[in-house]
Length: 378
Length: 78
Image 1: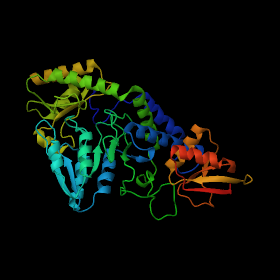
Image 2: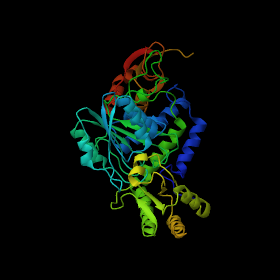
Image 3: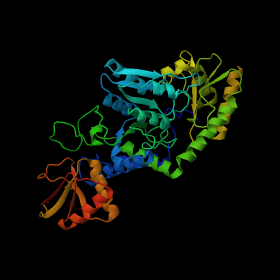
């Protein structure tokens, strides 16, 4: 099977990740729920992973890193935990439903929402974003990279806008964490939401968020914390404040090993390889008659994604044919990014997304190009 | 049960702080180990750092170096 659905999840993980999870499942106790070696080992592994993620994202300290199950959970905590009725919030058409749906839910609770439009190539106007800010704007919530087109938003630039108007910046880094360098302090990010199972190369069910020191976020959950048992309220200290319940220690062990792998291999090297495959595929298919590619390929700064359609074919049909005839795994249909599909005019047809990993090969990409050529000629 | 001795017991607000303490002490060669917080102490975190009384200054210095804040510092029978 040729796996080209890495924007959904990176199927192939470094062997160190698999070993770390297997090892943790043999010897890990419950972190922070005792002082015996098995529990301490779990706490050590989790703390080590916190440290690695804090380093990766330029956080003030490991205590700024909160573990969650995925980006969706992080975004729900962030959006529901900082916005109040009467606040105004700015977002973009590039967003995934993990941003949009919590925002729509808050809109029903009295939060005002402005959505910055996308041009036909999937880019936003930063001037439009800045102009959308009002006196009662609380936050800008935006993605670092579109999961549909691979287009990126310049977060450092958005950070400047947010700083200038004293509004919070909440970033969805689902498609970019582990691909592009992210420095939360340089980029003036208040909350960064990430998942572990995509380009961070960790297990599914891992993820987290960075929360700037001093920023109070109302927790979604309260409960067991391993600390302060007789207090009727959940502890307010970070990261415990946002981590009620037993953490996914086994998964976090894998995530820690994955970040170590990224540190040792270098995310620049990994990205270079992924983009090499993306460009090889893009140049291979762009001139094929009947092939329509979505997104902005006039810039080098992209997520390693190429999304396309062939003529008027249903994208699901094309994806199924790619699998059955060529053994290529892609994602068709709608991609949980409804406004982006509206901007591209692909609400009915959906689109076929190819997303690359550094584990792909030139031969696999060549096979995919040939497959599109043959399907487009049919 | 072992005979109890008067020890220095440092408590923390969070497990993350307790783990940071263990790491810092290991890196700086400071003495002690993590133990469950003794029942006589009311503490935020279930883990505390236990060491001989003579280690107080050395431990304070390590904590200062890494910017770690204790919840409380006790002397108690452990």
